[in-house]
Length: 412
Ligand code: F3S
Picture: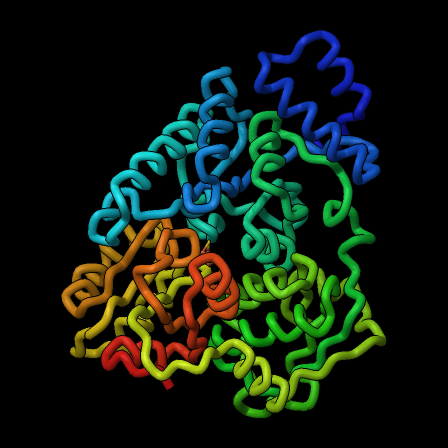
């Protein structure tokens, strides 16, 4: 990749001379304005973009009009890997999900507009599991907060958290303003987090992320998992745990990056900062309590926030055993992982046991208001937005308890 910066004067010259059409000119103008706001010295070329602003639930008619206007004006993606964030429905099974046909028509128009611009694939918040996998040191322009945090922290790629229009502009031009987390100095931690609670599964890592975000808004944490000996139970976080932490941290207020001592790729470049936060059993319990509404029954169970990896689908299948869900049970994943799971016979057998494996969407960006009242999930991020976007009562529980809730409708 060419790491030389494109000077802002070069963009201004392109605009004066007339860009490759009105959409490209608008995209360049938008990036130029952002670069000036953030005092960026230039633009960095990006090889990968992840675009948010896909669900009609979030975009509404103004967003749809905006995208169709850009598609009509011949906007086309640059030569790079560009994927989309989840839509408001499974593109094939929206009727089974109970999505209104009027909503579905508009959602499909949004997808068509993106496809016309050459950005048609993905529909996932885990693009790194679906072919959009930047590596250490690569500059990218991603939008979805959990994916941005995962890219910066776990992959060691470099991206700020872009808004939907800015990510679209990056996809069209192949550039992003060079500031913030593209720079070494912005990737230094400013808070040491000593973890003494036992963290076994994604649920616990989600609580850790929520706690840091709530206690130290704006922090970039350096996490020490073995601070006071998690003892024999201590283990390295797996992919699902890292996804959960990446999702919760920025949702609750932290910056979209973390280091884990001895584990993430840039942690060795830094010393643990002085300011310190401790996350022990009491903090874990307190955070868990704050993410649970006082309901003892749920009418929906949703897993896969962020979208489930294959091993998480296997874990759900194992926990279900031969039993069958009694209430609506959605397990969300990407189209790419869905195909792997289908090939392994997991999708069919889960569906036989009442688990609907949904693609392209999740319970936060799908229109659920009024259809369900209370949900069980193992995701701290899912709790935050389930309460906000879809006005649901939420039980945030370990995976096994979510599965039990699906079997009985009782939650904790
Ligand atoms: Fe992904 Fe939806 Fe959660 S976009 S991170 S599954 S809220």
